[in-house]
Image 1: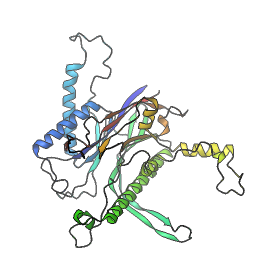
Image 2: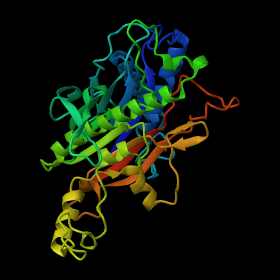
Image 3: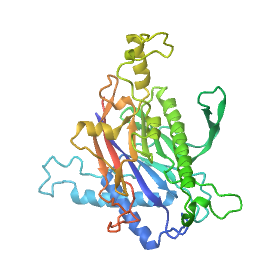
Length: 398
């Protein structure tokens, strides 16, 4: 048996001090020191074997945080791991006490190609940290060699209604292949387009008119949300296509990151794939010629297998099914607590599938630092992450 942990950590705007990332937003040296300190503690608490990071503007601060985490981990090990000098050395409860160093780990960083480096107009990338290293060179998906054209149809008419084209993702998708316990797992780290409206600045204008809140344009702002949703779902399809490429080769897959949508959102379901219908023998055939023209039992089994073999499972849902917990959240704002950070996995890790070689034993959520910043009385802290961290505890057989 081989056990490992895999986590997703949206760090919220990691960049060095006195470097303006968004307009008029930067960290003082003291603020940066506080943020790096908090991150090191959080990473020490996670102690994950594989970590996917989002919202990383620059690689160097992340490496500094990892090095500081290792330093604290070594101190914790020296103080806490039982040895003959400690009266509790015969106790068996310390299997998980030791911190596993990142000294030999590998870090893959994917900068955002939309990031020009211009102060105030920076764009974040993401990274993956792996104690097991990487089997192949990491791959970055962002600038699409073949633009994604999404054709639309005129309802009730034969002619088309144009298409939506996606040439570049708002943020990169980072694919790594990690060797674990005799297996090599294809892992995708993503940060899909947020729900913030996407507004177009007219030529020669200083800013988009929809951003002028004193001349509030409800329809224009709704159009911005529509653009953002289209982009997010287009990016989800690009990720889904890359996942299918791996699954069609028989490779186990895990997808993690900030989906910017809940598990049941259309964008999330694009990534995971559809859930098979219980019995397709109840359903009219696609070419039905009479009311009783249904799929056969053999076709039912064929269809369900075709869907299930490429469907990803949500770690959160798998955990809720096996525990008494009824809610998990990774963000809190405006009274809404929801999970927009996810870990998905292929059926290779689903014990209900006879061919599975692994399973998730537990699912941890680290969200004690979250407060609902929309309430005046909330102790909102802009330096800690505004996302909870999630971690799946995995076991491989053999």
